[in-house]
Amino acid sequence: MRSRIQEMQQRINQLEQEKMTLNISKAPLEARFRQKEDAWLKDQQKMLQEIESLKTESKERDDRSRELEERNENLEEEIRALRVDARKAASSLNSRENGSNDTWSRQLQNDRDVADLKEKLRHSEEEIKSLRLEKVSVESELSGTKMELISLTRAHDELQVEFEEMESSKSQNSEAEIQLEVLTTEHIATSAQLNAVCADLAATKSSAQAAMEAKEEEFKKEVEKLKFEMSVIKARGGVTDDDDDKANDDEVEDMAVLKARIEERDRRIAELEMELLKGEQLRRQMHNRIQELRGNIRVFVRARPFLPGDGQSTQTCLDVLPDGENLSIIDNRSGNPVDFKFDKVFPPSSGQDGVFEEVSEFVQSALDGYNVVLFSYGQTGSGKTHTMQGSGIGAMRGIIPRAVEQILSQAKIMQAQRWQFTVSASFLEIYNENLRDLLVNLDLRPDSLSSSCSSAARPASAAAQKLAIKRDRNQKSFVDGLTQHKIDAEDKEIGIQQLEALMAAAARARSVATTKMNAQSSRSHSVFMLHLHGINE
Image 1 (cartoon, rainbow, N blue to C red):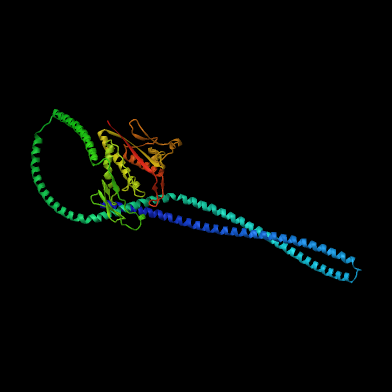
Image 2: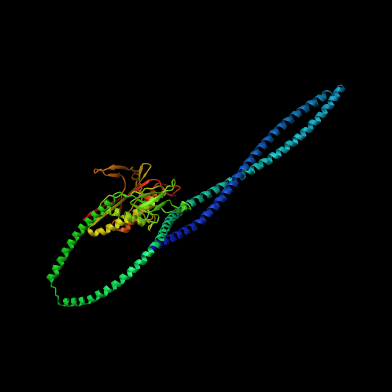
């Protein structure tokens, strides 16, 4: 147990170092990206404000120019009218020079009117001249504003291109983020299991101390007794050796005796092989009879340990009893415990190896030719995928990789008994009432495993083939069109590599989404099928 804790602690330290390295390499990139993004947003906002103000100012100046033009036209019209009035007054003045006194007064009035009109004309011409100068200045300023607007638009386009380049560089860092997320998940699972194991050790240490002291006293007495018996055996052995030496000197064997002994040995070997075969058949019968007596259908419960995302509270409403088959849950409404009994209950401190040890008997039944099904059920985030598939290649491996490893090891051992096994695997998911083959694009050839890409594309017709559940002539259900990938049963290492590639391809193809319980939650039902075919030669 201590070595297991030390191994888990070393794995946690290794994960911490890898996580720290990724964080260190990720931090400057994120800081630079945020700095560039903030600067780009500020410049963009500033330029948009300047463009908007320049557009507003340009519109106001256009309105002012139109207003000045209209005013200029009105003044020119008024000047033309004044000139017409002045000509009329001059003509009437010349025709009435010899008139009466009242005519003279009218002439004086007309002279004053002409002088006023000339003064107004002069002022109007001066105002027209000033308006023309102002119009020229407004037009030149408007031209400069348009040039500035064009330069700002060009700068905005350049900043947009730079921002898109930064977005592309950000997407390139997604692989490092995915790796960091995987390491974080494995670190969390390992830490949670280590905490649960430490809690169990602390609880059992005090009870085991007294038993150890009692055992030490018994061992001391047993050692003294064995020492006495060894001295007696040595004394007897010395006498026996002397007798054997004398007998060997007198014994002479001929070829007939040796031949008879060889024939006797061969006959004994044949008899032992027959007994071994009968014993193997009897073992199978007894093993599966035991499984039937224990129950062909069994229900196991595994309690998940607390994770960092569960909050600060570590108070649980579930209590696993020491017998490993009963648990009690506190009812929130009444506050009373409710007891449940199952075939096996795994506390939060149970590791992946403990769970597999309990179900490994079913794997042996599969090698004996029986159909075996392991069904994992639970709510989102309860650890179904972790229990069945696990993570990494160490203590966190799940039931599937451990079962395949046991099958490959047993197949290698049974080759001495003239058994030949072929192993193949399939992986599908049920999503939105549809069947999807998760391994349709997988290639498990040795050359593809050694290359950087572990899967090769197949024709589009194979990928688009629709799956359906059918029955064969023996009324057994099967999935029509589902691919089966052979796993090497001769070389265990190659078989494990093929399984890892198969599980990775299936994990990439599964339908997942983010939930409040899990960042990468499975959104479908997955079915992993391992097909075993054995022949005794």
